[in-house]
Image (tube, rainbow, N blue to C red):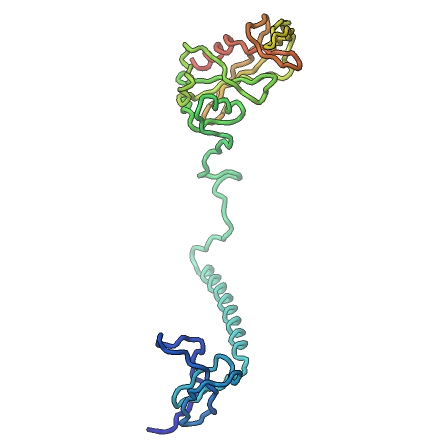
Length: 294
């Protein structure tokens, strides 16, 4: 049936920001609104004057009169309704969960986490590591074990008889620095400096604070030719043995004396105090090593 076209006031309005379906079409300028319900009106195709219509006015279609924008509170109402719906969903979700738990033959365990091991422990936790552990690239690095460290690439310590051992010691003048000490090269525990990867244990000689005593007065000739008298002092050390890989103490070598019974042919001294300290007795160190690792 032919007749005038009447616009549907509830029909969806065209999107003024939507790009035209034809990618090569020229953008259409906004057109003035048509009188509501006027049949037979054709869309105005001319360019409107500046400021005549607000930006975004939908383009008219043949035989169709667009609705002027209505000022309503529809958006506010929709927002309020949406908020109520969300609240109802939340309330319904909680209600469903409670009902399901009440009807279940095997009640759901509360969400509070349960302890599976003793306080402060974890069943699957690995043993604590040594934060001071390093990877050695020379024999001198093993001295870190005596300062509380460990050597990550040291050989595994299994039995005392199979261990290779390095010994390090500090001094009264350098208590925090440990230097290499020679041991009997014929012993089974001996290792060359190049064989540090085979070493699994470290002996630590630590100076006993306040143990120094008067030894000998040694007359020396300084490097500049000046003659000096140096106080050569005796002292004591403690010897402990440690697992090189973990730093753990594995044995005690007792007390080792550093005797100053006679002046050595070579000594180091402090230029300000003119004091020199005797080294730990090598024979006593080897005796303690043999007792521990043989």
